[in-house]
Amino acid sequence: MKGSRADAKAYALKLLGYRSRSKKEMLEKLKRKGFESGQIDAAIKFLEDTDLINDKALASYLFKYSSERKSLGKRGIRIFLTKRGIDNELIEETLSTHTTEMEEKAALEFAERKLRYLKNYPEDVVKRRLWGMLQRRGFSIDIIRRAVNSIRS
Image 1: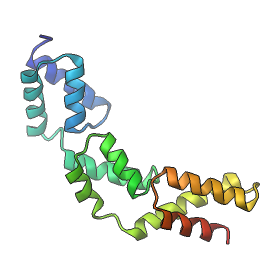
Image 2 (image 1 turned 90 degrees about the vertical axis):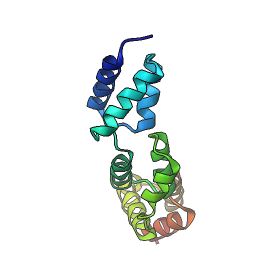
Image 3 (image 1 turned 180 degrees about the vertical axis):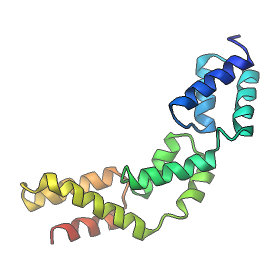
Image 4 (image 1 turned 135 degrees about the vertical axis):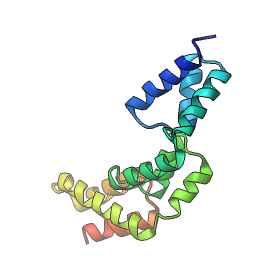
């Protein structure tokens, strides 16, 4: 046995001081720290009751962050949310607001930003590198094709 329920709660609050966490992330962190299941359950219940852990709000924030700041495509956002411990049902609900137009706009903006660094390369190299960058960010093939072709046509 490591610590008490109060220690588990204090550790959870300390973790939330660094960044928001999903319920799954918090469970894993508390288990890894060596707390028992009763202590973990009590800490999680406290965090949920006080709305310090809210997976739906976190998913919404991470969706906005990943699409606007990280310039991720739909597949990339799905992977990002999964890694942060958001369950699949909530991911699908969150991604239901993501439109093709939003993804196309994000891909085009990302490609235009990267084009500044690639302007001294031949066109075929630029297209190949942009294609790879967009693919790694989780954009669909159709979106990538449109973005790359509109950049240097």
